Length: 270
Ligand code: KIV
Image 1 (cartoon, protein in one colour):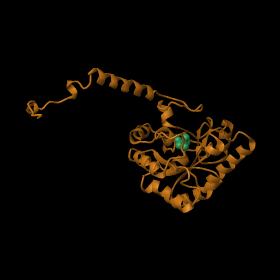
Image 2 (cartoon, helix red, strand yellow):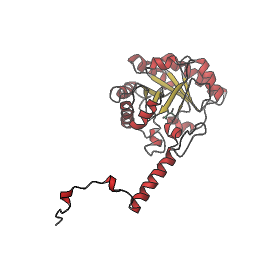
Image 3 (tube, helix red, strand yellow):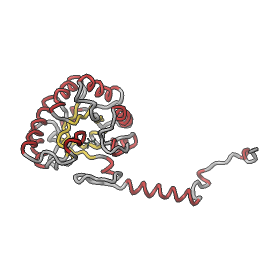
Image 4 (cartoon, protein in one colour):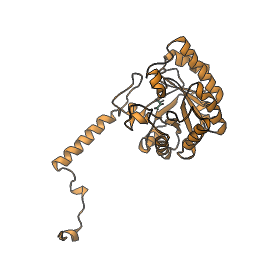
């Protein structure tokens, strides 16, 4: 899958996108036919034990992106650029985004977007690095906005529509819209030709994205706009509980899990 294939899906076929943070999960995501595997900076709170995405480093993103890229054959792999790795110095940002492609094997990068990412989106696109923009709730700004719905009044809704157009014009191949009213999701989707991929942005976006931990039922917290389709946490609790019980009761390992070498029967332990 290439950026141009994803762009071509706008208004034609739904785009499916799901996060993946490690190789085994990425393999399942890929084999299920997901179009875009996003190595989200949500790895910070979902897998690395941070309270937010803010502490996630470029090295951590490169490591998780490389694991996902190694396990993926068809899906387009997007590396989420972490807080402050872009937006200050353009040369540094290009080098860090380039690292995700050259070193980690990503196919494109995602930038939590605003006025500060229009020029960078244009430059990266010119250089051959596909950029996915991200508007609405952008968790890297949580100290400023909180993790609340965005675009709920006319002025901020208009700003999101304007920024969407500017990022399309700068070359972004798709746009994530997070936690905005469904009718604003619809309006942005009508206003631009690249696919909009919603997370809490209503049913009229061109595609949908969720975190894999919520979809499979691994995370304890589930956003109100999200949906859990499985119970992996329950399966893990049952399996790990049974393992502990089996070891404590002497039921594991059994004969079939062990092997004996006869000549060691009389080994001198002095
Ligand atoms: O980091 C992430 O998982 C994301 C998605 C929620 C879009 O940015």
